[in-house]
Length: 129
Image 1: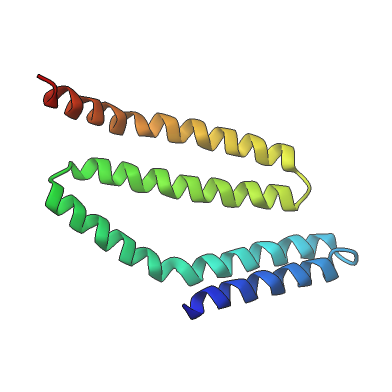
Image 2 (image 1 turned 120 degrees about the vertical axis):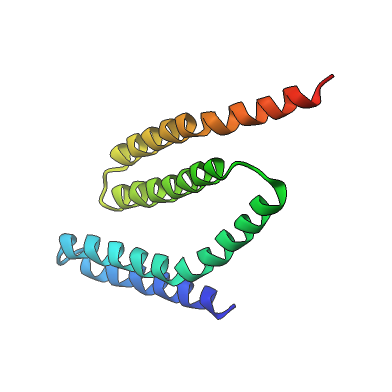
C-alpha cells in the first residue's frame, strides 16, 4: 500500500519541480516531467509480474490459445505507451499531436484485436445449435 504514496509523492514533486523550472528553462521542465513519469513506471513494474502470473494461470486452466495471450499483452502495452506518449505531447504544449498519437494507437489496437474478436465469434458459433 505504501507504493501508492510513493507514486503520489513522485507525481507531486515532479509537478512542483516542473512549475518552478518551466519559467526559467522550459526544456528542462519537459525533461523533469518525462523522468518523473519514468520513475513511476519503474516503481510499478514489479506489480506487473504478478498480473502476468495470474493471467498465465487463467490461460492454463481455460485452455485458450497462448497466441491470443501474446496479442492481449501487446494491446495492453500499446495502450499504456500511447497514453504516456500523448500525455508527454500535451505537457509540451502539443495536445493536437497527442490526439493524433491517441488516434493512431486506437487504430493499431483495433487491428491487433481482430484475431481475438474472430476467436470469440468462433466460440460463440460453436455454442449455438
